[in-house]
Image (cartoon, rainbow, N blue to C red):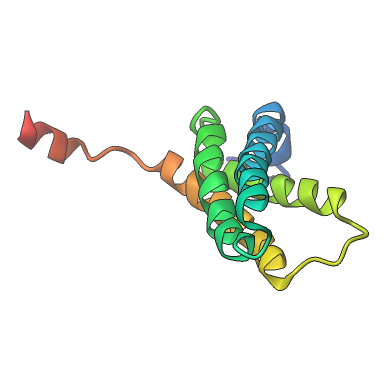
Length: 136
């Protein structure tokens, strides 16, 4: 809610300014990266190593793609990154709705959201211009 100069309250709709196409593409790409990791590992050594590989990979994939999606947003960087993680988690939940998943995979969903938010945070950071001037 925003109070304007005349003291009137009006609600701003931040969801309208979300770059949904970028969020959806980033979430889909993050999930594709995870599949590209999981399939060869499963074929070569089985599913057990996935319990240790997939959780950090979920964090890193959504960190990278959350930053990518948030960089062009112009504002609401953390929101964009968080939405990437949330949509990525929802994509996987939708695909595996009727299956019982190991606890590591359930934790991975939380790591996707945290990784996406961290990526959004990184996208919103301004470069340190003082350090750039001293090295020039």
